[in-house]
Length: 404
Length: 176
Image (cartoon, rainbow over all chains, first blue to last red; front, top):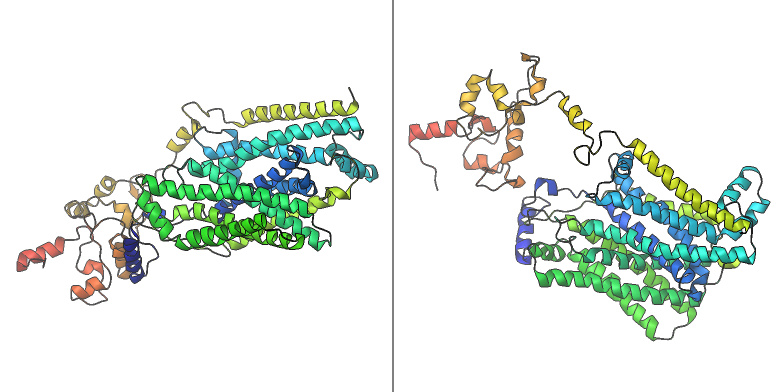
């Protein structure tokens, strides 16, 4: 639909005190996949990005990332624990998710996700346990009763901290991280695929979707790690490793350039190919999503960070200023990815299958999938992280010896 | 082999064992009739056929309501299901006997019912398929009181019955 027609329909509907425009099928009026389905790719994205940072250290030997490698693993684990929460909350009958796992149908994309999630959780759990084994052995020595049993289970009942044993652990960690990279990529690429596989929705149905989701996942995860690292260290009155921040920002820059390029390439391919429903996608981006896509996602949250990242790359900055800007850029990019998820998930549902009308999405505070529920779900991983921090020390310097 | 390496092998073995147990449990939990005809429980078909029918067809109603049938089948509403306006068949008839009276819509309820489909603002179908009106614009245009309900001019079973009869008598044609 061209913008003039869209405006006309908006005026028409405004006059009739309606919130929809033109002709929307009755079953398209309501946005069925709401904020929980925005959170779901956002959380798995954070897991992915955090895991990439850990992988860069443990597999690719990027030594400057050492201060945050262990924290990234725990961060990824805490968020992975909550990755399915939004989905389960979205379901009317959450207990039925087990049926999907019992009898996975090859024509059901979600059934596959359940298995990929389980593998991913298993791999990450073992990586964390092997990385922290020396710490757990130390703690287990002083523990008594039931806790001693727990520590024995967590250390695989092996208190052996000899060089040979640690070398074997190191090899296992490398193998598991190596295995974890494709698993993490598939986990999040699959999230993109779930949207890309919806043939009936012209904004989602593109093979670029998994790629876009994957790169933006890396962006959000790395940004989250940078912010969490800076904030937790500052609150604890500890120093921030500027080398580490610089490496993170460089990695973030690469992934963000790729993510943003693919986001724009998708719009470009829609506009160049002019497929059957192109007019709907164009009308969507220039109509209901004009503000959240072009203004917020592209101009404010993508172009501004690109300029800032450019400045950080080309201008020599003092460490404190560099860290400060790194925090700002990461915050904007976290918002960018969230808005991107919003524009894809909710934005994609604002157009009717009639190919003639658009609807609107109403955010609610106290709905089952409302803003309060979103805030609570986003707080749970941090609570898990807090509890994990009591057993698994976040920072490498807090312990001596063992796998670094 | 060191004790540590042995422990690792035991971990790997237990993971494999857990996966195996998981697979067995999965197989045990799958209902027996699953997959007989396709990716669903074949027993579900039998279970569904045992469900007590709640709805009837228009023919079920016309068996008794012959007078309404003659009007309904000649009007523009002939394809509309009786239950759509009157309610569920099984609330009225059970085992071929009347068990209760379905509520009859009166006054403003009638207008509300009509506007479920005939409201211009719904835009559910094109005007070629369904005549839609805006209230009170339509009442103003027809020069009737704004308190008029739809059934004061339109027969609910054959909406144009009275209108066409009036046209025949007066010879009036609608302004085009």
